Amino acid sequence: MFRTGFLILISAILFVSCSSGDQQVIDNPFDGLNPWPDIRNERIQTLLPQAMQRAVVDTWVILCRSNNNDPLARHIGCENAVAPAVFIFELDGEQVRSTVFTPPGEAAALQEIALHDSIAVVDRSPGALTEAANYLNNTHRGKLAMNFSETNEIADGLSFTQYQRFTDQLIQPVINQIISSEELVFEWLSVKTPAEVDILRKAAELTSKWEIEAYRQVIPNKTTDKDIANFLKGKMRDYGVTDAWSPDQNPAVNSGPDRGHAHPTDKIIRPGDVIQIDFGIKVYDMWVTDIQRFAYVLQPGENEPPEDIQRYWEVARDANRMVLEVMQPGITGLEVDLVQRNWLSENGSMNVMWNTGHPVGYVAHDVGPSLGGAQEGREPGSTAYEPLRVGNVFAYDGFFKWEIEGGTKTISVEEMAVVTEDGAEYLTEPQEDLILIPSN
Image (spheres, rainbow, N blue to C red):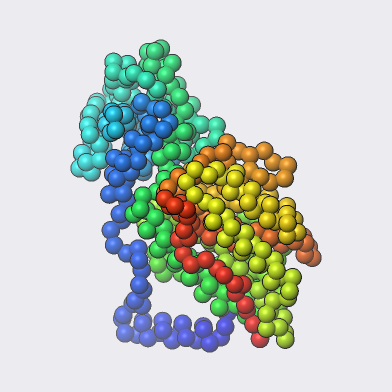
């Protein structure tokens, strides 16, 4: 339940709007044409050659199809595939040449978007897979990457039957050169262009703004966690943006003990609660945010948080700032995570199981270096040893965890930041102070 005056005001606005036939005007930074087609072309032309060189890949082959398409379909232009098609990218010096083997049904659209160097239109019999295999058998030299991976689900789009059917038509010397595309995909997707960073910056600003607005609606002893979530869902509908992750758990709103990644409940918000909002939006159906904001509900007679809550907040906030200070090209995610772990240990926090941060961009947990691996009793994953690069974008937390009635509570000051030539910078104004909600 929200403030009565707020509801009356909204009702009046809607009444006037409906009566006059006018619609409420929204200043939406994501109106207009989707910039993805131009950005995709830039990424293929400028970032893919570098990624193939770093991954030591000569050729990359992606098999596309309808209904259960490869996760990378939109990145290479085969999102509209119906009949099977094959997209081949070949490294040629400092450039990449792309060839598409496609049946006639999709050829016209591929020719019109002009994303690829060559469109080979093939009959359905023998089909695109056979023609592409014949092409590779006659021309291919060097390492051939395909989309299978044990560690990177974004690079694991090739089904067993697709792999079997395609490789059955390749000669043994070509088969001997097949490798996983996971390193190539890691190198390519982990770097965002300046245009993409600008989009993520605008989306992050909107995400944070709405979370703060949501806290302004809280009436202690009446508003529930789910009410806050519903307010944010309404904002998303008004602006035509969608969920950054599973709709049931976006936003995650929690005024009680830790629940991890979970849906908001009907728990009533009470004085003395520390409230967490973990929220992300998807804009242009392509780029996503992931930001957390925290509030404290004042007890009757309080004008500021209790000393212990204030200290927990400050430790977590300062941990977030320390992480930003050490983020720079060349440092590993494990080294970044260690900075926070040492700080938490010095300041009496319980062990926090989550990584300090993760890449964010096309999905909430995107491809790229992991800012983690230094947790107690946990072996670092392989991406924790990867160096940060200019253009890596992260959502990362500053932590503090303590015991409360019914379990534990964790403050996780989550901000978004991009790695630059000489360090890192936030994508939106970071939260400096706990948001205080009066009890009356």
